[in-house]
Image (cartoon, rainbow, N blue to C red; front, side, top):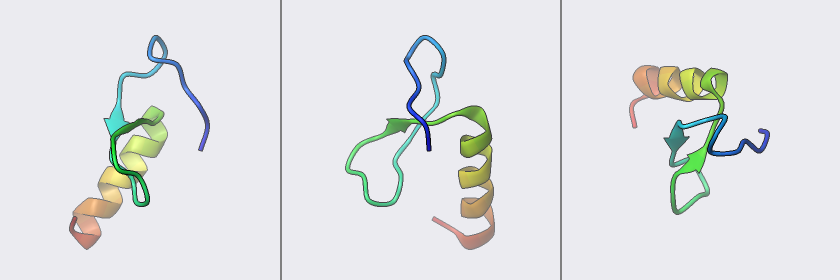
Amino acid sequence: GQIFCEACVSTKLTLLGTNKPVRVCDECCKHVLAQCAVNGP
């Protein structure tokens, strides 16, 4: 993953190994949400 500023990316997700939502790029967000849809939360 990469680091994104709030002005560039507004999407936040709680990822495995994190306690709070972190900023993720649109492509990573799509990938994570697609995996959740296939595997369940």
